[in-house]
Length: 251
Figure 1 (tube, helix red, strand yellow):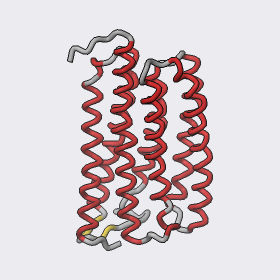
Figure 2 (figure 1 turned 180 degrees about the vertical axis):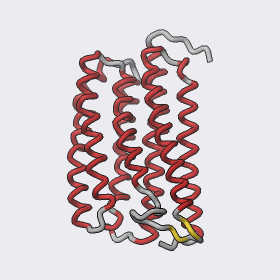
Figure 3 (figure 1 turned 60 degrees about the vertical axis):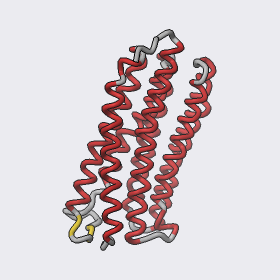
Figure 4 (figure 1 turned 90 degrees about the vertical axis):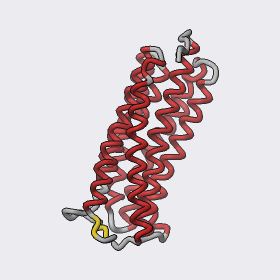
């Protein structure tokens, strides 16, 4: 497809923004380990892993965009030299389960409760991403709708676990933590909501280069919010819980 110079430069800058945001958050969460109690550091390690994995895939996406471009013409599809959308799904199938594990890890729940939550959230998150990919690459709207509906089933189950099952444990958290976790869950819903909207562009009559550009922008903005802002909020919760348990801020 032939992008205008404005569309091409917009995507070039968005992919660059996504890459540097992920790398910066990785460094920040790594160097902030000493500012929380040891039992909350696993959550920060998971956050660093999420943004590192995403940063690697944005590097691959950025290079794929450059390699598939020729004078504004971007080759899209499955042929060699085409822009590779699959990098996003490889990223998501790794990072989305880790995002959910982060939430459980930072709350430092009892081992049995944590294992139960993780045992339900991780398979559901993997299924959600895996079921979404066939619809992403489908060329007919019927297939997109079918796989979109199937992908929504584990998504709804994740919401149930986050708001009902996880909600039961928040009553025992320090002051302010429950409210912050509540905002964290809303952030996940808001950012994850961008993905199906972008996914459904063809069904909304947005096609061609506009659909391609808006989809990539939507995915990138949602990724930064769902990984970087999410990770920084996890860090905030870890700091709050550490302070509530007597850790003094020497920084």
